Length: 189
Length: 189
Image (cartoon, rainbow over all chains, first blue to last red; front, side):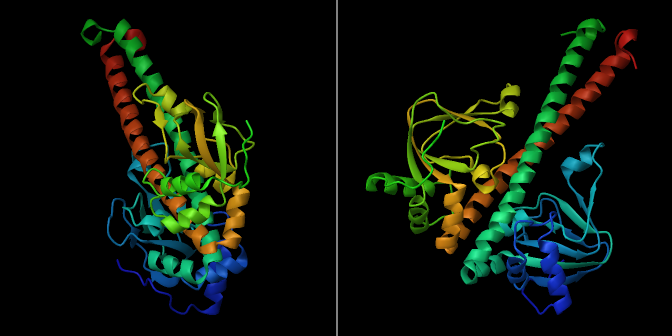
């Protein structure tokens, strides 16, 4: 799936909608409305058909962009969530960002995102971000700061999950040791 | 422990050393040497005694700064690493950054860092970062981009760890279920 990566004229209504959605808590709450309008002017509007895989976990090419969902819903899934039965896969909607690590460094994707409805999305490519840094450095600095804060939040969440899973593994290991010591001889250690 | 947060004159040799260390792979490799010099001019040089706790896990005040180690060694430890016997606690040295999430959003610290030798560190406060964004927006944009890339790396590493721990928990649970079904009646489910 190839997307339109370069800025092409949005209808005014869509530009304004994108600017408003970019500053919601699910995206980049720290950006001002004026900053958001400048960022949106570097984004490309894309219509996407239901069922399209927007980004794919592990994918290593065409990874250097992020997307803001303007309309429709996206299923986010990865190896981590799919192996944990307790995690309901996320459905995200208008005002959600996907792929923000890619726009920073173009590394392989960490999740798969699939359009569960027809979508309207605004795409910011890494090239567009680098051009924005040259043309509007202050706005860009605040944009990247807002993305970085979002990543900090994700990192804290991941650290909490590591603590929980580490504690769980330890408890299971202890229970297993106890089962072995009281259970049948062939399991004893 | 209170640090000098505001820029005070470094000796030229220390400024140059700080600028060189800021662009090493352990800190912010994507920054140019010229950018690094500008950033360093917003940093405050601090001498720190062996044994000092630089930042403390969970601490919620005085969290809005990051530090670049210029001389000496720091022990990094947190609840996650300390509960996992297989993880050797990290010792980091010159050219390493600590506290970069704090400078972005001032949230509680995610690790404890203790000086294991006398140290020389360069501190960048959040105030100084915000002032830098106003005065040198292009440099700041590239600085924050470099910090954000570092956070992306940490996040990917955390996701790998979650996968490993999730797989371990599942394997232990299966082994435990097997032990219960073949073991003594009182453990059976």
